[in-house]
Length: 96
Image (cartoon, rainbow, N blue to C red; front, side, top):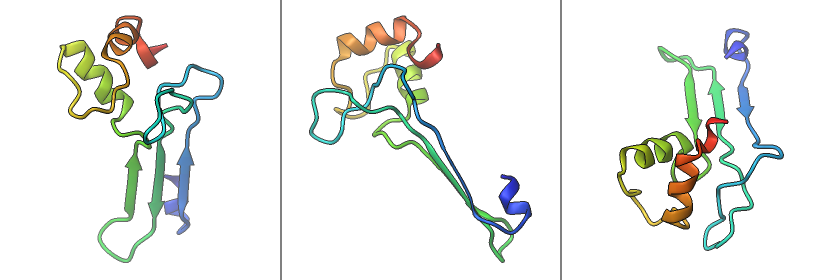
């Protein structure tokens, strides 16, 4: 991140905006949330800065797509409906 070069903390987030939502909150049955990732970079006196780049959903969208395309069931019970998930992957999912 450019902020690191200036000795500052960098923070980057993304929002799915008006696009379809695919993430349900813990215990939820409807997906009102996006897969909004977050990335943080912090300067350090060590060899390299501290970087954190993570998904805010139980499974990163890219991993879910790869699992679906390969026909591998999810690693946890975090997909609300495998039928809907299969349709979503077949339709391109987040690839639009």
